[in-house]
Each structure stands twice: as structure tokens, then as C-alpha cells.
Image (tube, rainbow, N blue to C red; front, side):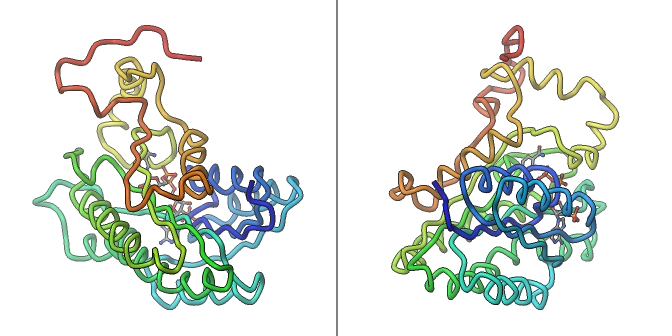
Length: 265
Ligand SMILES: NC(=O)c1ccc[n+]([C@@H]2O[C@H](COP(=O)([O-])OP(=O)(O)OC[C@H]3O[C@@H](n4cnc5c(N)ncnc54)[C@H](OP(=O)(O)O)[C@@H]3O)[C@@H](O)[C@H]2O)c1
């Protein structure tokens, strides 16, 4: 479906980003893998993409730094002479209660998660224009709208991502660029270890699974499937939307959740 397309996934050395990168490669795309601190898993992701028979480019860049974002897109332009799809996945954050937040944590989180979407999009547009258009999908979170423990600055950054998504969707439409967001529910990755409530309750994921209407938690492949769909011609009329991928978990009224029984699959 994505033969000869060039796809950039930020923060794709590991976690959900790696699953998205590999999924696009499995559908025929050449993929740019971006990492910041962990080179080894990123090299493993690159090796898997090449095993699928597609080109893979590894670029270290801190998405919180504008100069790094510009270098990332310049490198892609030199290598591939354009870009078709940008997946805004990289995220970081200071998980602390409201009263313990500091300016440094706000700036760090907002710059890596949210400011980067605006400036990555600015850099992506000229490369997508060379291809006659493209698609951008940003990864948000339920914390954009709901209150999660210690999540205030990440939640604010995700709310900003969702707002920026809507503006990009409207202003880039004339350039044939389709923009949307995906909000996964709880997905088992290393990111969960940043949450005190996950570290202190080894059964938390199991409990979440048992009340999820779909019978199991979303996994990275579920997220990758929806991201790829939003970049496909079939999704052309979906613009500026945030698609929740959580098996129905966020639909439940707190305290009234009913166990679904055995997890699906
Ligand atoms: N897991 C969940 O339950 C869940 C739920 C809702 C939304 N999400 C969202 O899904 C996305 C992926 O989450 P995940 O669970 O896969 O997270 P993760 O396991 O913590 O991985 C984070 C990724 O972001 C990269 N990254 C961090 N800071 C970066 C920076 N400054 N510049 C470039 N890359 C950077 C990391 O690269 P390095 O390792 O190289 O630093 C890594 O590849 C995030 O946007 C997250 O907010 C996750």
C-alpha cells in the first residue's frame, strides 16, 4: 500500500514508534527512524526494516531542539528528495503532581512533545510538496482531555498537539496534506514505568485489561494499524480528528466498570 513512499516516525527506535515504523515497512515504505538517547534499539529497528527489503535511514535528533528538527528534515531531503508521511510519535515528560512541577519540566515536555509538532510540520511541508501532498499523524493520549496521575504537563502538551492537529488539518489541506491524531489508551511499553501507580501496583495493567470492553489492552500493532489507515487514500475525508484506540476503555463511567471476563485472544 505504501510502496515507494518515504515515512518518518519520530521516536521510532523502540516502543509504539518502532511498531509504527515496522508496520509501514511491512506495507512497502522506506522508513526514517529517529531516536534521541537509545541508539541500540534504533539500530535493531533499522535492521528489521532492511530485512523487509526496504530502505531505512537512522537519524539521531532531539525533537525538543529546533536545530535538530531542521537537520533531521534536511537529511531526509538529501537522502530521499522528499517525504510522504510524518508520524509525530516521540514524547517525554516530567511526571509529577501539579504543585511539584518546575519551569524546566514544563519547557522540556512542551518542547519535545508539542512545539516539535508545529516546527516539524513546517519543515515537512516543502518535502511533501515535492511529492504532491502527504499525511501527518500525531500521537496524543487520553491525558489531553482526562486527568491522569502526575500527568499535568504531558496532558497539557497532548492537548496542544490535538489543537495543532486541527490547525494543520485546515491550513495544509490546500497542499493535499491530510492531518489527524491518534490517542492510544494504556499500551504496555517502557513508558508506563514512569508512572508511580504502575510501579507500585504490578496488577494495574491486568485490572485495566479486565475492565476494557474489547477484552484486552491495545498493543503497539493496534496503534500502528490505525496510524497507517489514516495515511491511506481511504482516510482522505478524515481531517483534524483524534481517533481513540483503547478498546472502549475511556467510555466507562468511573466506578461502574464491569469485568469483561477472559481477555480476548
Ligand atoms: N504507552 C502508552 O500507554 C501510551 C498511551 C497513550 C499515548 N502514548 C504515546 O505514544 C507515543 C509512544 O509512546 P511509548 O509508550 O512508545 O513511549 P516510550 O516507550 O517511552 O518511547 C518514547 C520514544 O520517544 C523517543 N523520544 C523521547 N524523547 C525524545 C526526543 N527528545 N527526541 C526524539 N525522540 C525522543 C524515545 O527515543 P529514545 O529512546 O532514543 O530517547 C522513544 O523512542 C508517545 O507519544 C506517548 O505519549 C503512549
